[in-house]
Image 1: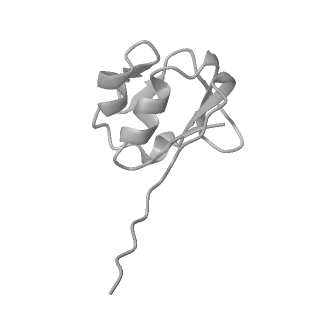
Image 2: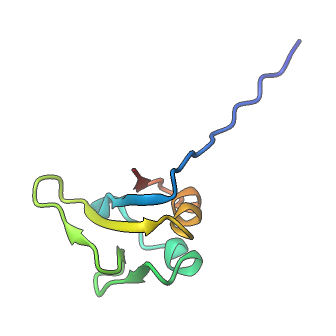
Length: 87
């Protein structure tokens, strides 16, 4: 009969956003670093970190406030385990 196509769309305001990474779930593939080296780097533990980010002591997530989302949108969309959130 009829096929149904599902798509995920990301809507960002682009200004004054917070990047949140569920660091413990990071698999260390480096996709975010490759797509957005201005904001991401690999740590000694083999996992990615947001440059200048701070660990949230309550959640264990890493957070970084940015004025412009920029390439972080690409990093979030390409993350194979979907652990980067932009709010």
